[in-house]
Image (tube, rainbow, N blue to C red; front, side, top):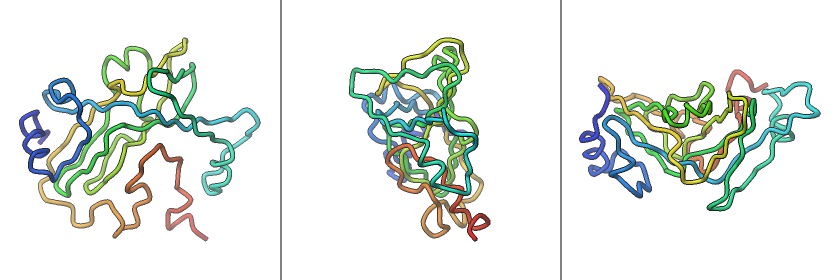
Length: 193
């Protein structure tokens, strides 16, 4: 079951679901979702000299990425075909009986910008800012402004709470993230030698 605006408000008030700050509830809380805003930190892939990124070698990923901070009022220019990581301004905490999905807002999609490549699923127990996988599928650059409502989060109620929710007890790699994070796939148990 998808939570409605009334359900969302009740869970936020109860305190087990956390999305903060919500600066304008009337604007951000939609009929069945909450609009999330773009933060001002980005991870940009500088791939000019790279033949291949090796996900099992974290140095490869780190070597070819740079962090970029955008001041309030300025914009990040997302060029055609470019892929960067951003994050939500809001800190999200999903309780053990909910699962969430992050999706792009229609107004952003109509500019040919997508907010996630594959990682739109948010596990029960996740806590942190949500990393956005931003791509420009269009033919012209698009300016993205910190603070703009770029995505929306939809919460689904599960039949039963998760027995082993996302978090430290299961070695979750992105718990508590406060900025966009590059891939940590090399930390998967099957990847460690």
